[in-house]
Image (cartoon, rainbow, N blue to C red; front, top):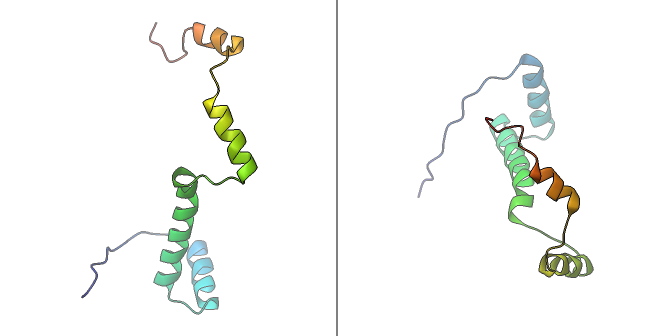
Length: 90
């Protein structure tokens, strides 16, 4: 069974091209494999904190306790939110 693959087509400046080609060659990989893997690693890194939240057990317990506690007054925020927004069309 053959997987359908998407095609990427983009331009890079000559300096970046030389750098990435040299790195791919040093890693003994094709340019395509090198670029796709590097892009996937960066995408996973960027999205990881949006999908996964990992803490040590003690910190997790503290985090959950803070989430579970009742809201507290915050005069600073109250003052801030009482002012008109800089984005209002007043």
